[in-house]
Length: 128
Image (cartoon, rainbow, N blue to C red; front, side, top):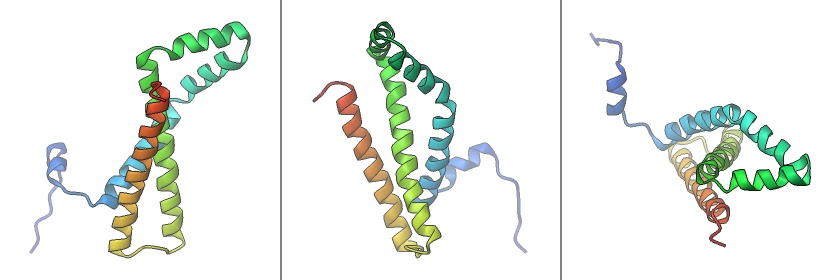
């Protein structure tokens, strides 16, 4: 007879999730991150459109590297949530639901979202 037991937090590190599971968890994390950062985004938006003086303040706030990292986290969250959302919409349409296609699409979501985030990071930090 199989023995069932409750898992502990330390047991979570022993489990190996498939790529689809990791993308699903990151989809939820990115959605939560975007929700939590809504006040920050509204503050930046308000500072950018109120007046010319406030736009100068906005530019000085944006020059801070910590603020740039927060914005980069928001960019990653949006890009990952968008790409994973398209993947989940395709799964809802019963496209690519077999195991190998699901794994390939999960890896594709990670590669595409991280590549787009790297391009945005290069632009944000002034590399081009």
